[in-house]
Image 1 (tube, rainbow, N blue to C red):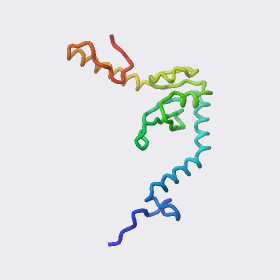
Image 2 (cartoon, rainbow, N blue to C red; image 1 turned 135 degrees about the vertical axis):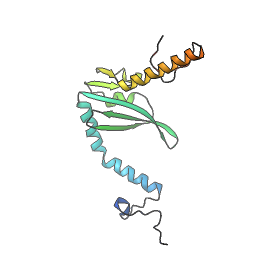
Image 3 (spheres, rainbow, N blue to C red; image 1 turned 120 degrees about the horizontal axis):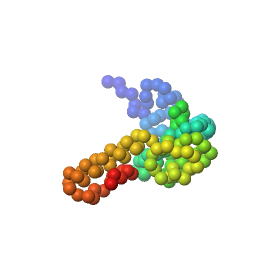
Image 4 (tube, one colour; image 1 turned 45 degrees about the horizontal axis):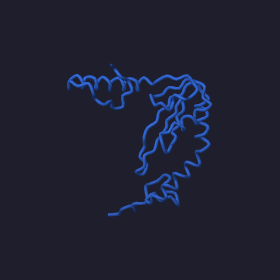
Length: 158
């Protein structure tokens, strides 16, 4: 039976001389090259987003080789930019959106509050928080206790 060596594929970029995707270091080298190649494209996409009248922003944790980092998502519903940050510190949003003057749609992360633009809270984030609070209140009633620690809920029903 004939077998193809593990570091070769059937075609495309991987079949080009010098590109053997079996080694992690070579894959990393390829990614670095692609990131450098698209740096100007990324800058132009972010610039178009910031110059618009509407930006949706969100952030999420990412596990990069065992280290917790953050990926920020900025979109104007036509372009999307994903930006990496070592932390969830609001500096990324503040720096990226410094010149933005339109309406910012975001979750309830307090890091957005310092931005000097009109803001609207994301309806999906609000519904998620209301549902979490509803479940918390129902559990509290079922258990007959007043104290149930909230989990991710920023809304309180008293």
